[in-house]
Image 1 (cartoon, helix red, strand yellow):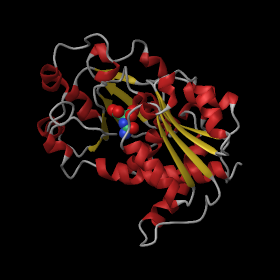
Image 2 (cartoon, helix red, strand yellow; image 1 turned 180 degrees about the vertical axis):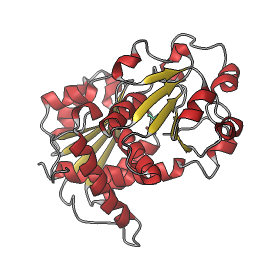
Image 3 (cartoon, helix red, strand yellow; image 1 turned 90 degrees about the horizontal axis):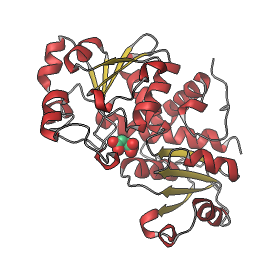
Amino acid sequence: MTGSQLSTKHVLGIKYLTEADIRLIFETAENFKEVINRPIKKVPSLRDVTVANLFFENSTRTRLSFELAEKRLSADVVNFSASSSSVKKGETLLDTVNNILSMKVDMVVMRHPAPGAAYFLSQHIDANIINAGDGTHEHPTQALLDAYSMQEQIGDLAGKKIAIFGDILHSRVALSNIFCLQKLGAKVRVCGPPTLIPKHIEKLGVSVSYSVEETMAWCDVANLLRIQLERQDIKFFPSIREYAQYFGINQDIINKSGKKVVIMHPGPINRGVEISSEVADSSDSIILQQVENGVAIRMAILYLLAAKR
Ligand code: NCD
């Protein structure tokens, strides 16, 4: 069913990818995963391609993962972070990016606090754009690496039960995961306190539960999300301690489910809040495999977009 090319010249959100695109990215990532496990990890695929990483919001994993992916493909890389740039002097996003493009940049990887920022850029500039997170909206490369990592553990996701726990309301990982998993035929359930679950989310075709025990007993994979405190300007729950008590995932809850559940988290993890240390470090947790797969998935996306130039 997969073609040899993506249907799009940007990766702005999972919403804009087809199932065939997703499967092609996975197949390509499989090859790159083999490459990055070789003693010599570098291939020449992106030689003479210049990629700008524009990070207008904090990031550790995603920024390093993209940079490594670019370097392993032999791209030339320039890095930009908003805190040390002219954005602070009042320049608009479009002016900033056009200035960078004048230096002959071919691809832009961007994280930005405004939902739709990557889409906006794609309407105004010529480079290939990869959305590395736009506010509370989408984080497509995270969802792709998550779904790829799930598939490695439990095989084809069609009909599989995936639960997303935590702050669904403020999470771009949640929305991109929902779109991606549904395109691959999985059943998705979200679980968290009612105040952190968007109203009418059932309209996206997901089920909702407020009980962590019940949801853990239902699912094959549990994707745990951090509370996005930096995006909350009012109180959505009484205290972190109370949240951890009612919605934190500990080994007891998993044991009570009576089965094996794959435990995932996009990071950064808050030990003792949404996930106990025992769970994070257990053999059911694939948190570090997700990080490894992230580089292969991003190499695949860069490679496939470069082929569209
Ligand atoms: C996520 C993000 O930035 O949205 N992190 C990541 O990319 N690894 C999730 C988060 O910050 O909680």
